[in-house]
Image 1 (cartoon, one colour):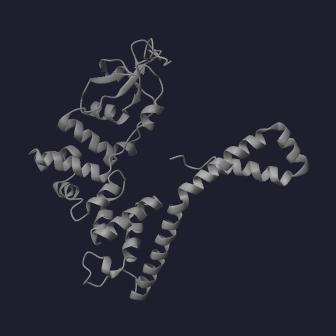
Image 2: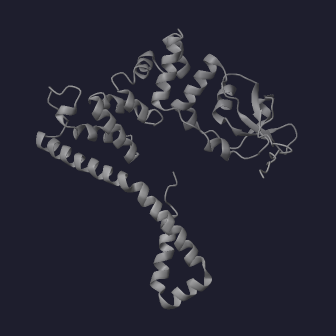
Image 3: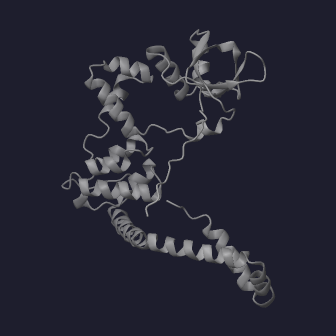
Length: 303
């Protein structure tokens, strides 16, 4: 006989925000941290101020009610509020949070990667927004805007897909452009595996790239301060490094699974008072090592 399972209906879902935004006087908003002079002179702050001046406030700041009557605590959006003050605004449209903690908003920030920014700029240009207007909103000059808009020119789609959400300097793409498509993919994988997107690491990968894998394989590779012999040694070292990384990747999943199973078993083992007492009396060195393994494997990534 088949059983019919009734769906569980929640009586009430607690909202994280009020359904409507509030227009709040700037003087009634209490910041939870001070904005230093160095922050206000940063390029990030200038970009926010320029964007608000050109196109207005895109994302409202987040506030919650304060214990002081008629005032609100600012949970997220300190730079936006400061920029609005300097621009002469007296009221701000805000999101009203039902929670009084700022950790959630800061933890969920997703920084815009160079490739995501390139696509945003390219889309705006396709919609006939002038380059001058875009540059002004981003607080950069038109020349820098053009460089951002053409960031992925000469980069193969596979490498773009690998780096689309990675925060790496624009100069890294200049280095990748000197390689052929296959090598671009390999270089992108090396950057990701090392979690190192610095220009120096990208340049080292270029130095270790065989002549045949360069975009212009007919022009001899030249690196400042390095001889042909040093470049040849670097190519060999990088090739061996790639082979080692590939070997580790092939067994990583299985090794991770084994360690996770062992960790769970040992955690139960040393967590049993009788077993722990027995090992402590008969094999104390085993008990110490088992506990170390439990602590070590607990730091393994889960995804």
